[in-house]
View 1 (cartoon, rainbow, N blue to C red):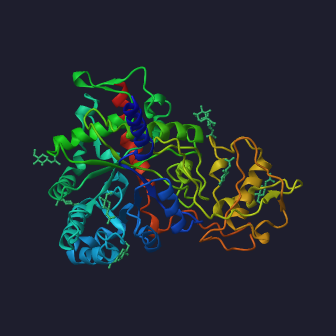
View 2: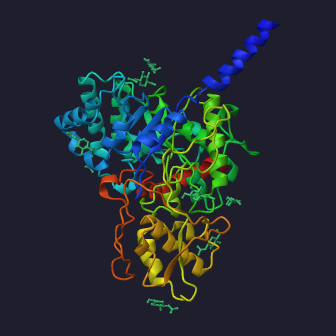
View 3: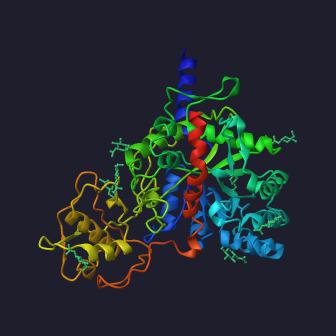
Amino acid sequence: MGKLLVNVFLVTFLVFLGHNVEGLGVNWGDISSHKLPPKDVVKMLQENGIKKVKLFNNDETILNALAGTGIEVMIGISNQLLKDLVNPDVAKKWVKENVTRYEPKSPKGVNITLVGVGNEPFLRDYKDTLTNVTGPALENIQNALNDAGLGDTTKATVPLNADVYLSPSWNPVPSGGFFRADIIDPLNYILKVLNKNKAPFMVNIYPFLSLFYGNGAFPFDYAFFDGVSNPLKDKDGVEYTNCFDANLDTCAAALAGAGYGNMTIMVGEMGWPTDGNNYGNVTLAEKFYKGFVSYLAKGKGSPRRPGIVEAYLFALFDEDRKSTLPGNFETHWGLYYDDGTPKFPLDLHGNKKTLVSVPNVEKLSKKWCVIKSDVKNFTDLMTYACDRADCTPLTNGSSCQNLNDAAKASYAVNAYFQNNQQKDDSCNFEGKATVTTKDPSQGTCNFTIGFKSLTSLSPSPSPLPSSDHSDVKAPSSSSSSTAPSTPKFLAFTSMGISFLVSLFFM
Ligand SMILES: *[C@@H]1O[C@H](CO)[C@@H](O)[C@H](O)[C@H]1NC(C)=O
Ligand SMILES: *[C@@H]1O[C@H](CO)[C@@H](O)[C@H](O)[C@H]1NC(C)=O
Ligand SMILES: *[C@@H]1O[C@H](CO)[C@@H](O)[C@H](O)[C@H]1NC(C)=O
Ligand SMILES: *[C@@H]1O[C@H](CO)[C@@H](O)[C@H](O)[C@H]1NC(C)=O
Ligand SMILES: *[C@@H]1O[C@H](CO)[C@@H](O)[C@H](O)[C@H]1NC(C)=O
Ligand SMILES: *[C@@H]1O[C@H](CO)[C@@H](O)[C@H](O)[C@H]1NC(C)=O
Ligand SMILES: *[C@@H]1O[C@H](CO)[C@@H](O)[C@H](O)[C@H]1NC(C)=O
Ligand SMILES: *[C@@H]1O[C@H](CO)[C@@H](O)[C@H](O)[C@H]1NC(C)=O
């Protein structure tokens, strides 16, 4: 009896302390006007027990902060570099300077286990400019890794958008999955390289986009993990109750059809935004992530791919300087706000712990900028402020959509004011705005307070609502490879949704 109790205790203890969601990682993008110090972000990752991160670049300060932590790191190579990497010497130099230098095998080094060669290069919007260079670039990078003696622990792969595969309209089930005919040759090149080097196939899967592009036609519950009343039936009675499994297995079937039925599949991006759209709110994001993390924790996998699924959540932080061309939700993909505060509780390890904040963040004072009550015309100052700060919460379907025009203008000037670190002259707007200590937040609309950050990109002290409407929110070319990138969604519209919708209905 005593022994039994001890055993029960031990087992319970192990379950609660030792249980990690194997295979769970996070994407850490940095298209933000205000960044947190990488060292503090890494502390947060460690406290949360997050063991894998995926970067879209190879930023030196971020990599140095990750050194010696053992955290597995995926670094990224931008699409613009792919054509240069067709030259093996360039690839060799790249690996020497950007991988070998960090001593991936040393406990003091950066544990670089994956290199992403390009980002979603087969999007239709790239019009084939990258299709022929991606395979050779991948091959040269992996060869350089192999030559450097890193080939067994560092694998090169290509993060792909999910519309590289589909099911035929006459057989719209996962088992019918095949690769798009227009890219089959360059894809076969990549598959051959991946297979030869035992590297994983990587794909980005977004149930949110299925809803977004479904225009009401996509079954809501199918985007989550709580089961559906009307599962999708594949041959042999296999049933699909969520679109993640169906998507993953369509990929698996496409790989099998291409002759690589046992190639590892990793999910490069998977996430849910919290604003900027009817379906983008904290409640749904929390429901989605809870379902997905517990899906991962079960380790059950999908019907065709039973077992651990390795997946990277998208993303760690909101990134206010991403292009909103694909949708107003683009700046709201974070599990965390840009100030390092988690948006909702999430238990990553089945131990009842929840996400912890980034340490050492200094919030600015409890001060807001608002429009003076006698101001009637807000057009120009809103244009000015919203060109320089994130106003997406004001758009249709978003958290501040119900504000009246004056309150919307206040939201805009406050966003600008906080972005400028609350500098007095950034709340002037030709005398139309003023600072208040009374929180103007109302309902779901959060008038945020800024934080002391590493970089604040808009120093412009004296806002003059006029000529300069340069598009400062568009991502710079150096960071344009951060995903989800603009063209992905366009491609997804053209093809992905018809596939996903038909997958369920037909
Ligand atoms: C890198 O991560 C892998 C997987 O977690 C681990 O097995 C390995 O020991 C790590 N390497 C270093 C040098 O920390
Ligand atoms: C290292 O990586 C950066 C960013 O990808 C790139 O610009 C640079 O050329 C690389 N270094 C070498 C020697 O290739
Ligand atoms: C890619 O290569 C194929 C086969 O060699 C060729 O037919 C095609 O024109 C190339 N595409 C581009 C955009 O260079
Ligand atoms: C995949 O299958 C091939 C042949 O069936 C086999 O040689 C290879 O070891 C398998 N790879 C894995 C990772 O199971
Ligand atoms: C979140 O979005 C769903 C779907 O649009 C909606 O039903 C729900 O009321 C929203 N919740 C909040 C708190 O906004
Ligand atoms: C507001 O100001 C703008 C630019 O100064 C002007 O074009 C617009 O007509 C004004 N709107 C109203 C309602 O007066
Ligand atoms: C805003 O969203 C609602 C509900 O989704 C829709 O009916 C309406 O047409 C949208 N309005 C605009 C201006 O897009
Ligand atoms: C408002 O946003 C800030 C970050 O921008 C966050 O720290 C805070 O928790 C949010 N408050 C609410 C009530 O959502």
